[in-house]
Amino acid sequence: MTVKVVEDSNFEQETNTGVTITDFWATWCGPCRMQSPVLDALSGEMDNVKFVKMDVDANPATPASFSVRAIPTLLIKKDGEVVERLTGFHNKEQLANILEKYTD
Image 1 (cartoon, rainbow, N blue to C red):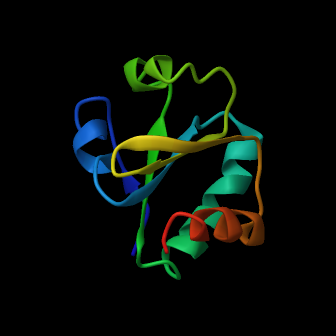
Image 2: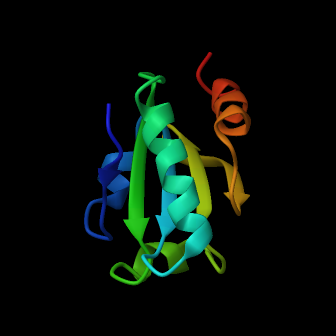
């Protein structure tokens, strides 16, 4: 599985079922560029989680609706409800452990 790019127009549709993790990022953000390969690697290992990413500069409405003030911010949803919010860089092991709590 790969990380899917989402926009304001399809965010809700793409993240309203199952367990999803959204990476709010921007091209100019160094920590975001570090986070991206971690999510890419995890997406290949966790078939029961949907991985999506959103460029906050190109899609300002969705990050604003979740009060995203710093990036990278990772938003974990289960069946459309936000269950966890992470800000800053997280390594693969940290993210896998957090995601596993919601995929039982």
